[in-house]
Amino acid sequence: MRLTEFLSPETIKVPLEGTTKEEILRELVDLICRGADGPFCDDVYRTIMEREWLMSSGIGQGIALPHGFWTHEMPFAAALGIPAQPIEFDSIDGKPVKIVFLLVCNEEQTNTKLRALARISRLLHRKDFRKGLAASTSTEEAMQVIVDEEAQHRI
View 1: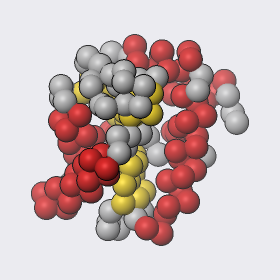
View 2: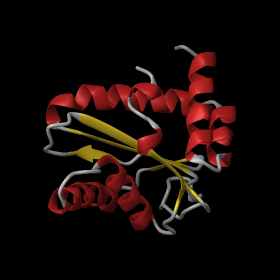
View 3: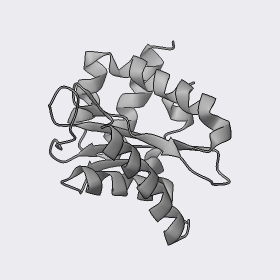
């Protein structure tokens, strides 16, 4: 699985406008809920936030990987956001977040979500990739960082 299979310029936002974890997550939920009714988006946001209240998705090194489930005809969706400034996220290393990948799926697509998380994690272990994403100043630039990294590392 490649990031370009589930991310596109329509599901990437650079820079994110929010200045808090809650605002950032709302922006990303809104990206994947485009065209859906308000209550549905609110339910997705609530699901993501309930998981955050249990345990932060800030995994360290400036990265957050929030994820959750939804009841939607679309089985899987993902979004990427790069905040204008690092965001306090209650990360395990205590450092603010610079890169946020949001993944949501229905219960039948758990395997797809896990494969996507594995791919994202594998690429984010590469310091140059993390730096390139975090330094992106536009959606197009972030997308190009992803395309270039995947062209270089086909694993």
